[in-house]
Length: 183
Image (cartoon, rainbow, N blue to C red; front, side, top):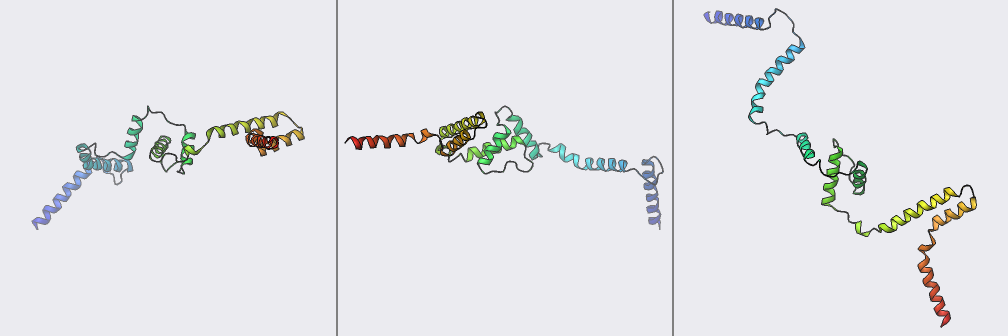
C-alpha cells in the first residue's frame, strides 16, 4: 500500500511542476508555443550531431554554389549559343532543376567528351556565300517594287542559282567544242 501512496504523490508533484512551468493554469495552449517547444526539443537532440561534424553534410546545392563561384571568371556562352549547341548534339536544352550556368557546363562537358564529327566536312565559305547571295536577291526583290516581270526573273534566278556556279562547267564545254572544231 505504501508503494501506491508513493506513486500517487510522485504523480501529484509531477503535475504541479508541469502546471508551474506553464505559469498559468490554462487548459489550452497556443500552436506557436507548441512549435517552439518542439523545435527546442529537436535542436537539443540533433544539435550535438551538427556540432561534431559540420563539414560532413555538403549537399548538391552547396556543391553547385561552390563550383559556380570558382568558375565565375571563365568566359561563358550566351543562352542562345548554349541552346544551339545542345540542339546540334541532340541533347535536351534544360534538365529538371538546371540553371543556365549548369546547362553551359553540361554543354562544355559534352563538347569535351564528344567533339563534332562532321565539322571538317562542312564548306563554311560556300554556306556564307550562299547566305550573302540570298540576302542580296531579297534586297533586289524589295528594291524593284511592283514590276512583275522583274520579280519573276529574280525569283527564277533564286531557284536556279547564280550563273557563276555553272560557269566553269559551261566554259570547259565551250573550250572543248572550239578544240574539236579547230582540229
